[in-house]
Image (cartoon, rainbow, N blue to C red; front, side):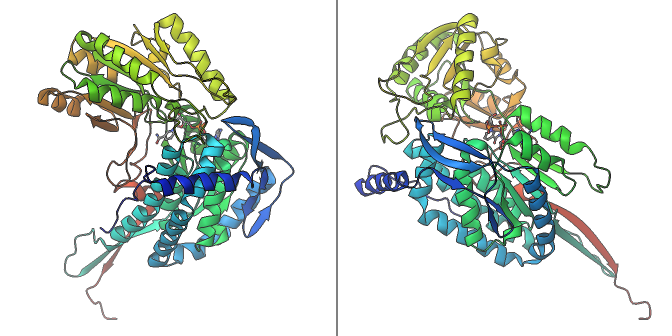
Length: 519
Ligand code: NAD
């Protein structure tokens, strides 16, 4: 396999810092523009617009996003349907070349796209850069994977019989993405659908539609025909739901919250009167991820790993750590050091290169996290709450660490999606594992331990989609740590892994009797 991960930008190099500053400055001069819909080969300016504000400076209008209506969903569906027969027949090497071209364009525009992420969803430099790198990885990885899949000859052959196994695309479908990895997740789902020959309607999250629009444009400039890739921004509850319901939609690739994922699964299972197929749904959902701190853990490493996992991007990652389960004898020592480390994490605007903890994505997210902090105060003991530097205007919530939390408490069971950490004590390693597993989510998990027996036991019994041992639990890398959850965290094959593409395909077996019977 020729695939190699895209390197991350080294911001200790002055030229890289200067280039990123320049990208931010350039972008500031183009804020506030209208972001249209892309339907067939037309750019459509609808009647309604959704203002997108910079989460670090809510007074700053980043762009006006088109709010699609039902007439637009009808149009994209018609276009996708008519584009499918031609797009599915484009030879695979050509489709792969298109994705590779798109990857090159993303690389050329890397700082500009990362700067959009800083402005639109409040990422810091490093996180924004990593998201663009991951998007580039997906384009290359899935192109490579599909070429390999095509070369496989999976069937047994016997004399007198010819068996063919044909993997085929499903048809038009919709990609519904979250805002927290605005480019990577969207690119991953879209690239997988396109390389397998499906037509894609992109329905991005309301909060990250500008970044998504740039991806759609790049894919089209790289050669994806207009009907095979369309861009429809708007409200999830309106056009998202209408697309999921449509009998022209053959599949839905969704990443987002459990609530919406389950709703999509339900809606997609209802058969429209003339619908002659069952929709396929890929749903990657939330998490309530735990890190276990064993009695003999290297606390230097554990403290850094937990702080990075819990508070990176202000805890707004599906993989983020929101529970720590520490063995009682080391809990206080661990907690003291974690508090000191957390205290030292710089809080600031996304544009500030020193920022580690940036804003939450919008006012609603801030209100939700503040509500959970109040719940936490009634359930456990607030061991630490950071203070915001003066002058910040955005949707900031300083990190909070609760201790004396019980496994049945709300803050130990519900996904908060903010910088809030619940610390719990366990009297034995077995009890720690039991607490860790005893939530309905099973996305990521971690263990800090020096005990080979406990490492082995966790590998066996800590049943999450991605388990990390003696390292942080965020930052899965395409092709190295295929990503995705179990139980209520998801139902798909892992993103960035060898099975992912199969979900966008259906197979036909064709058997021919090749012994001649007189013709
Ligand atoms: P969300 O569920 O609110 O929205 C996700 C998408 O669904 C958006 O595009 C939204 O417009 C759309 N949507 C909303 N209602 C809809 C409906 N009724 N029908 C169709 N579409 C609808 O999630 P979010 O706030 O964007 O993202 C955060 C969530 O995503 C967290 O729960 C996080 O854990 C999860 N997430 C999971 C993964 C993973 O790989 N498992 C990765 C990233 C984020």
